[in-house]
Image (tube, rainbow, N blue to C red; front, side, top):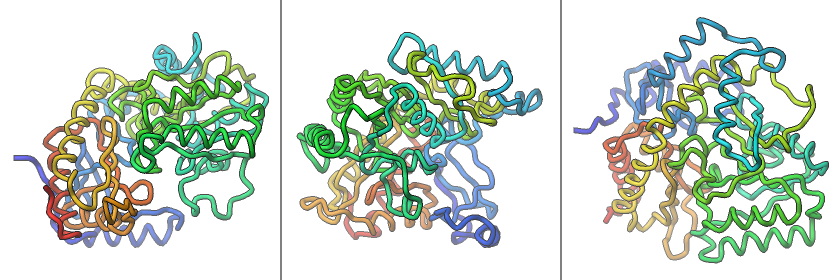
Length: 441
């Protein structure tokens, strides 16, 4: 029998409620925290709160715990490294674990060029900030292009690229010069999705921004916060050709889609199109703060002192990344692909004909379910999505997140099993039926 979440109290329980009240009184009100979840300990896909409630986690801390919570091999690597060296700042000194990690990433050759180099930071937004500075350095140009509904971070440069929600940008201008274009959405644009996106870029080049002034185009190979949208297979090749035509660097933000999440180590592998600069974070170190900006030596030729980070590439985070890569390369990328295919098929079987399910899409364990009020009009069911996330949590103990205006995302740790996938789908089916009164097929 499959393990199911165990709710011993109404949520939040009394101990959790007290902790939430204390936290809310002290922590920045800018935090969202829709779930009243207090995670006291976790293992694999399972979280336990201080009241003893057990939750099935299909959020992975926003797609971060790629090897599941507290994988024993990652924990062992963290403990071993912590006993030897906690910090020495790789911007001014050397330590073995950072150099070896850089060599390991370079050997993967995830960008165009004969040889690449790695800049280490602490988060996805830092990786994208570094990519923006690097693109300006390498090209001598100042402008950038990103896509509507994209998310690249919240610091000033990365925020300038981000076009996800008004409240993320409101009150923080003026921002850096970024022009936003249309991301191809096959569900809403149909067979001409790529043509529509490329035509819009052509209009921008004709009316708003001279391509000769554009340093880089930033794009998510699978759009994350925007709705877990998988673009048509011809989009990245055509974008690559456009960048080459105009001497623009192509930057792939794989902060969410990288590190095995889509069933391949890097999401770009699904099309074979390599970027000039690649940004990674989230799943690279199984929960420890680490990011990487990778580019060829031709691009990453800036001088000492041009960019640095006191904590970037911390020894403990690098040790966790080594253990994470061991697990990803050994089994978990393949498991992401196989369990992801299983989960996608099961969702389509169980929910594909539901009148409020417009689209089920994804690669690997990066799966989105778009909810609509009516399948024929495709009107976005925003309230239903929000209610589904909360109903699945409060009644069943399933932790999921929204994305886009009206979609939910399923992004569990890559240790997810088929049994855990079945439990997730069972809960979603029950919650959707409970909220809509419509049974699944």
